[in-house]
Structure formats: structure tokens, C-alpha cells
Image (cartoon, rainbow, N blue to C red):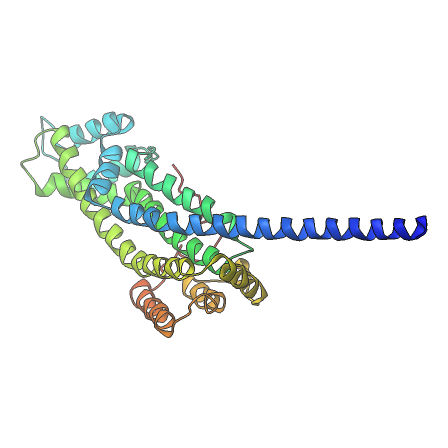
Length: 308
């Protein structure tokens, strides 16, 4: 056998070895990705449950108290109380108190990074970061998780907006002064207004929870469906999902529309008809209670932007 032939054989064997090494590397990377994905899906569920548990009376009261009892607003509230309950002369009526607030009360920009609000944001950001690496490999999981995060963050954003709404303060404070003669100090006024603001926030949070509920249940349903799959099955699912022609985020206008679009990917995940049926029932439940108020559009700005 000549040296040329031996050289060709050696070259071929080297190429085969290199090709085999590359295949093994790809298989290893695939297994690492799917294992990481399974771990991520496992942690999503308790994180979502934590966010749900944080929305409570204590959370609403904490936000309300942080604003009403803010050191920045202590002096303006004392000035308002002195105007509303003068030591000499007749007290002003509600219209005059409202006019006073509009002219003299500062714009409410107090920071609301309370402990529970900060924890709420930390968890939603953590969920977004956990699922981000799978935007292309498991688009079904990524997009339904993102839709859920947007609603969760809207809940906190809306609560902060309500707490800082000037019109609410301008309406509530004169009403409390006029209707409750038992208020005899600015500290008493702060306590009563904090309770009123807490009730307003609780009502809004409960409405938000009604909208978030079906999506949270959807996310749990999808997580369970993924966790039923083996590593090899997850790899095949990933290829099937990537082949689906789904519209980009920028083309989606509402969360309902996004949930219908993402079903194209999730149909590969659901192995039982009961899972598909349950998904559609939850979608109908969301559309029934959601009515998709302003600010609940499906935009990438939602995730990770809870604000101060």
C-alpha cells in the first residue's frame, strides 16, 4: 500500500473522527438545553404562585401608607388641614377645599418602592430572565409566560398610578373632611385616607387578579405538559415549534390575540385532547373577565418595567 493511499485513509479517518465529535457535541448541547429548559419550567410555577400570593390587603395598605405618610407630603397635608379646619372663622366647603388642593398641593411623585412592591418586581423580572433564553427554541412557552408577566406588571403599575392620581386625592380629602367631623388632626386624616386608598387599590388589584387568574392557570397547564416530555421529546417539540409560522410580537395587538396565536406552537406540546380543551376554556374565561382594558396590549415594553 502506497503512502498516498495511507495518507488518504488517515485523512478520511480524521474527518470521520471530527464529524463524530461534532455530532456528539451537538447532542450534548441539545441535552444541556432541554435539561435547562426542564429546570426553568419547574421553577416557573412557584414563582407565579408567589406573585399571586403577594397581591393582598397588606400589599395595598403598604402602597397607600407609603404615599399618604410620605415625609414629602407631610407639610402639604398639614397646610391643607389648617385650611380645611381653621381655628377662626367658618370652614371652607368642599369646592373651596378642592380648589385649594389644585392650586397648592404638589404633584404626587413619591417613590413607591415598598418591600412588597420590590419583591413583586423582583419575581416578575426573574421569570422574564428565566424564560428569555428559550425565545427561539421553545416559543410557545416563552410567549405565554411573557403574556402572563405583562398582566402581572400591569397590576403593579396600575396600583402605583392610582396611588399617585391627583384627582383621587383632590376628591377624597375634601370629602373626608366634610363628611367625618370626628377627624380632629392631620394624623387622623392620614389614617382614614390611607384606609380609603387601600380599599380603592384592593378593588383594582382584585380586578387585575381576575384577569391574571386564567393566564396563570394556562401557564401551569403548559408547564405540566412540557414536564411530561422526555429530553428527546422536548428536542422534537422544539423543532416542531420553530417550524410554526407565528406572527411577531409587534404584529399582536391584544393578549387574547396572542394567546390564540401561541396555540399554534402549543398544539405540539399538548398530547391529550383534555389539555387542548382546558386551554381553550381558560382562554374563554380570560376573554370573559378581561375585556382588555387600555394598557394591556401585548408589547415588549411591559416585561421588566414596573417603574418607581
